Image 1 (cartoon, helix red, strand yellow):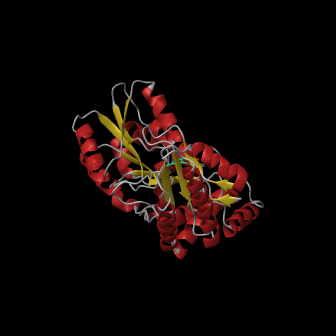
Image 2 (image 1 turned 90 degrees about the horizontal axis):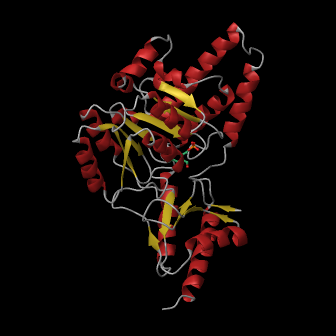
Image 3 (image 1 turned 45 degrees about the horizontal axis):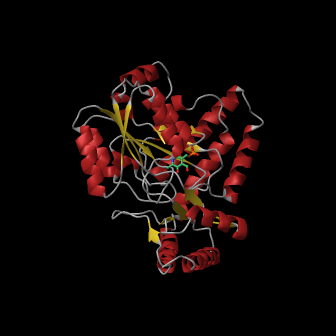
Length: 369
Ligand SMILES: Cc1ncc(COP(=O)(O)O)c(C=O)c1O
């Protein structure tokens, strides 16, 4: 298999798998004894520190572990008390698992405004106009678009949200482990991410940062949190958790922090891919004039070519795995997302590009002029 779908799921690093096993073995003699509970709490706090370091979070106690990004999103939105006619601003590039939650809010009368990200200034202008109505209760936005890797101007947006005293909720699923993330810069934004994508952590891991400012903006949640003697963020850790997986995620974060994100290598793959694929007549890249994360390049519909059929052909005949966008985002389909990690070899990426450019050339030759 030639795998170019790292933005969906990355293989777990061996060191991370070893950490999961070692942690569970170390916990086994204690289990649910007083000593075991103490061991668990101490270990969990060490893990929060590791995540805090990668995300530049000042207080590790504001971090909660969750099984994935979608659960974090569900918990946050559920813990806010929504009224009909309140507005949630978002973008048209959000992930389907996030949109499902937004549809649930919409069914309760909440208005979802999904701004189409044409250019960064236009996006900001549109958001400013929405905020000026006084009806927006929260902004929910990806840090990096899962569609084409565009990086949203979340620092500017967080300042805007702060000025309007509304929470910004950032979906960092495509950002953490991929591009540098500095949650400290985000004026109290809630930030969640998933461990099994760019962090190369264990499957079914993630975390959410719940800063104190979020509590200030949500009095009902703050009241509820006050009744507990634990840091409010841990209220997001519902039920029994797998401390092995938590330790694995922490290890993955520590490795990313110490080894770096290999952005040059990823950028090199992206540059090569653009040079190679640009030569295919009719190919377009889905991009905006703002920044893009280096591990993702998305191809837009070549006129007259059935892109979806093509991607299926690549998978069936060449075992090349890419992500297809057939039904969203509106007006930008069909599209094919290529994504690579620094662990993908140059030969693998080259082989995939040879195959893609070869088959696109072939398809285009058969098109009527
Ligand atoms: C931007 C974004 N948000 C959320 C998700 C869902 O992540 P998870 O499966 O960890 O819930 C994805 C998955 O692709 C994503 O790309």
